[in-house]
Amino acid sequence: MNHDQIQQEISIIKSMIEKTRRETAESGHFLILIGIVSVIGTFAIGMFKIFNLNYMDLPVMILMLVINGLIGYFVVAREEQKEKVKTYTKSMLYQVWFGCGIAAIMILFLFPLTKVYSFQLVPVLVSMIMGIMIFSAGVIYELRYIQWCSIVWWGGACLMAYIESQYKFLIMIGIIILGFILPGVIFNRQYKNGSKKNEA
Amino acid sequence: MKHEKILQLNPIIHAPTRLAILSILITVESANFTYLKESTGTTDGNLSTHLTKLEESDYVRIEKNFVGKKPQTTCAITENGRMAFKKYLEQLEQIVQMQKNKI
Image (tube, rainbow over all chains, first blue to last red; front, top):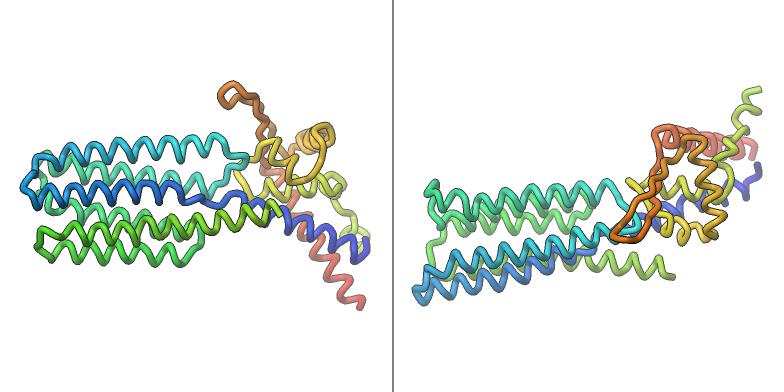
């Protein structure tokens, strides 16, 4: 076996591994879409509070949950079905997201409605869970920028725990933009760059 | 004697298409037939032949199922295939090292 043959074999291995890695990048659509829905929902809840329409909180939260569930189904489950390649990385990411989603639902509905704690604490606890979710995504995909975004969630949780204001929802909106939509955009950029390279 | 042993690369993996298939499958949980065809740039028949050979050697596991109404063939590397590929890479590395030493 000569030098050229070896180089050829190595280049086949390298190009196939790189192409597959690009093909299996996370699209970020899920984070962007649930980020947008959450911003709108949080804004609506904040406004209802200002205008003393507190009874509207629960219906809006349920609506957000249903819409995010549908996004989860159509974006994640259907994308997964259509995917030509399945990776352990993506499977692990979706399982972490699913687990954090279940925890967030319990924090949002189960415990406040059964009076374990007040609704005031919900944004703080949800932010902590979302921080774990984004941090895990960054670790799984080895993206430091995404890991940094989790600090926004945890820092935001501290802020919301100690600040008492009816405009607290604006902090939450900022957190969602920096902690959900921004990582989604970063994932999406990588995904698009990878697709372009693969097409080329 | 040692020299000869090192140069005997696994003939099942040595073919470029099969090497490409295993290089893809080693990094993923599973890949479908269409993806393997597009990535390796082979025809249906050619890919099918190579996959059968890999399956016969217990390097690849092939499953046929339906996604909606469409039939889909999914391939995944087996533990044997993973070990064989690892060994193949080690052998390649040894050959490179030997050639470097010669120079």
